[in-house]
Every structure is written in C-alpha cells, then in structure tokens.
Image (cartoon, rainbow, N blue to C red; front, side, top):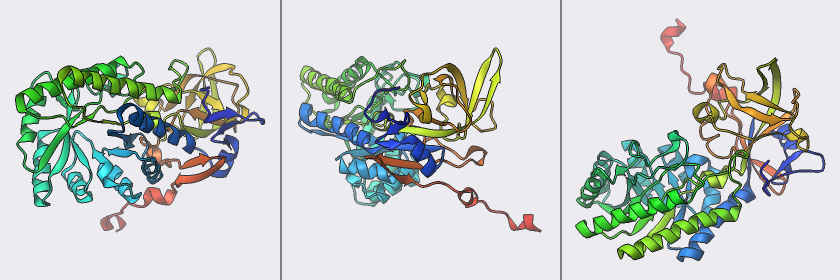
Length: 442
C-alpha cells in the first residue's frame, strides 16, 4: 500500500482515508463509492503554486487539468488555492462557471472544439484558448470580431518528444491528433496564420508530451525544443514569446511498479522545468515568459480511492480466481482501455497480508469487465469492503451508464467527516431523457 498520510490502517484494522473509516463510509454512503481526501488535494495544489512562487517569482499560473476529475467542488477548491483551470469541453466550462470560477483564469483546450463551445466560451469571457486547428482559429477570429474582442490564444505545438508511457496517452509524438508539428512546417504556418488575425492575440505556445511520466528528462527536452522553436519564430516573425504552457503529465503511484514520489517531489519536477526555461531563454536571448503548467492526475489521483462490496467469488482450478465487486468498467474503464494496474486492499481487513493473486471482476455483461488482474489480496469473502487505490483521476471522469448501471456518487473527506460532492444517481435519472414516440403507443 502506498505510504501516504492520506491512507492508514486504524486500530480496528480498517483502512482510513482522510481520517474517515472506509467501512463506515461504505455503510453510510453505499458502494461503489468514490472517496477523495480534501487535505491531500490542497497539499498537491499548494506544492505547485508555491514552487512557482519560490523558483520563478510567481510569474505564471498553475492550471488544474479538469479532465482528471471535474465537479463544482473541485473548481471551488482550485479557486480557493489560487489556481487557474484548463477545460476541454463546454461541459467542463459550464461546471466551472456554475461553481463561480473566475473565467479569466480558464484556458480552453481541444483538438476539435465545437463552434457552439467556442461561442459559449467567448460569452463567458474566458482568459485564453489553446488553438489546435486553423479552422478553429478562423471561427474564433470571426466570433471575437462580432463581440468586439481581441481574444488571447496560445498555439499548441508538437515538439516530437516521446514520453515513456502508454502509447494511447502519448500526445507529442509525430503521429498525434494534437498540436502542430515543429518539424514539417505546420507549426510555423499556424503561427503565420494566427499573426494575421486582427481579433486574436498570440501570446505563446503550448506543449503537452503525455501522461503518467516519471523521468524528468522528457519534460526538460520538451522545454528545450519549444524554446528553440520560439527563437526561430522570433527571428523570422519578430514575435516575442510571452507565455509558455508546458502541460502536465507527472506520474503517480498505482502499484509498487511505480515510483513513490513524495509531495515535495512534484515541486522538484516543476523546479527542473523552470530551470530548463531559464537556461533555454538565456541561451537564446529570449525574455522570460509567464510559465503555465497543467497538473491533474498528480493532484487528485492518489487523493482518491473507490470502495466496493465483494460479491460472487469464482475459482477456476489451475487457472485463476475471480473476485467480483459491485462496480466495474462503468465506474473504472481504465483496465479495459489501457490495461492499467491498481492496488487493492480489503478495507475491513486492511492489516491482513495478501495470500493470493486474483482477478477483480466487475458486474457488467462483458468478459473483459475487469478492474485488474493478478491483484494481491487476503482470501476475500462475500461482503468484504474492497478499496482500489489511486482512482481519483480518470475514473469518475470516464464513468458511464453501461448496462444501465448507476454512476457512483463521490464524497469529500476531511478530518474524518465526509460529504457528497457528487450525489448518487437513481433509476429515475437513467430514464429521465428517454422518450417513447406516440406512434409506438398505438
């Protein structure tokens, strides 16, 4: 189990998160249940914010990457901690606005933003768009003109840095739907295109090389390549880089195959990135830009767990043992998508040592509906409460109503007290938008 202050085993032998007994949480709120530790979320936000202040004089902004976990309470916490936010859809933007998040601190991403989303974001007066296509730039310019605005934008570029992570979450390799390549001339062409727009103000560049990255060199190399491009653009177009957004992607602990980075360690990652910016700007005689980063997984990933109740147990002698829970791919599709690995604990027997390797199965009508394979557990019994760790990022965000299962609620815990931040769904919610045409009733 990850040795973090957010999790511990109490005197009853139960798993605790944020001072709350997981067995009590399951009894009070039911399962499946997403649980988030507020103190850990705030601590992670502060380490990035404080590093920016200490190492760069606060000249920039930490943007919470909404796609990791988006709900009104998360935006409120981010606002209280002085962070901005990046959003990737009209829905995320709407949620942020409903929470009262300051729109000037919102950056809007996406490789295919809908025109309706762009219009809505302009009406909200968000701070900046991260442009990812020429068509987007053209529409954005026309809509800004209609509103009498000059809209700030960044250009997403692809520096061609390969991050050592799963192929599905690499975003800056040559073959990517994201960004304009610096190698084939498309990034330069996009700069020229944007500089010709009267109602768009190009502030700088954005680059994001992928997710779940542990080694610092990829981030440093990406900074160097983006600054080399900035120097080239300055010399050719007399364009001065004002903002540099290096995205996110810092890895977290899921299993003992991963590094256990202390909270302060993420400040060291950010410090290395800042040092690379300073060194690169000095080398190329560039003024120091505002720095932006977009941590998401590293803020909420280890702050969250998912609680389940064990149901059927099926052992196929000589092959494997299935331990089924009351959730599955509808609340955590990441094993199905990426074969992601997790650590599980029996929350009501957390002090017991693992005895066997099992496949944790969900309840969906799919053979591939698994939370994980070869997961080490004590011999589970029907009725046990299972906690799957490090599920704060990209679990609720990817949840669905597959098989018409209910998306689990989420609670926020602090000092042993838990409150809903996402209420439970009901069967009525499932059919709320169903319509039976009149001709079917005849």
